[in-house]
Image (cartoon, rainbow, N blue to C red; front, side):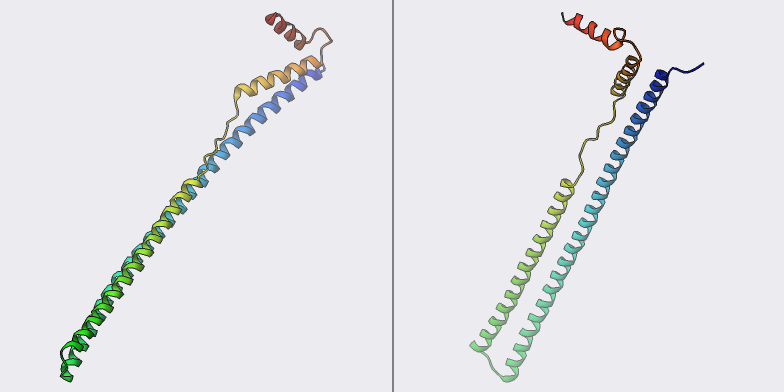
Length: 188
């Protein structure tokens, strides 16, 4: 008993269709998992950057506080030295007062410069934080991955099987011919 080649071709068509659907399903699943992984790595990277920015802010704040203490200490030492020198020399009056005002003015100017530098560095850290957050949002992969449709695969397989069947039939007895006649009758 020999097998009709049409049935062998139909078997091949079914196998090809099932394999294609399975491959599309696997590819779609892998794309979704890869997208999730990339987005998670982006979140981890953004979190690490936020941590570094926070550490930089803390270091900037600490350096500013240390500089403030150092300036206060230096200002007090300078004023103390000036007062001791004036007393040792027996000098008093306007010259000593002018020197003390100059030292206080210099100390206040140094503190103002420190505060200005601190504000500028903190603004820079704030901008880094904003850029990091915007980069994390804009870098997120939000592409929609379509999954293969079982209904579409079944309809495609049905069409392929019908074409294979029709290729083995004489003219006038093909399924496509009767389908065409039926649809024309519906529209008339």
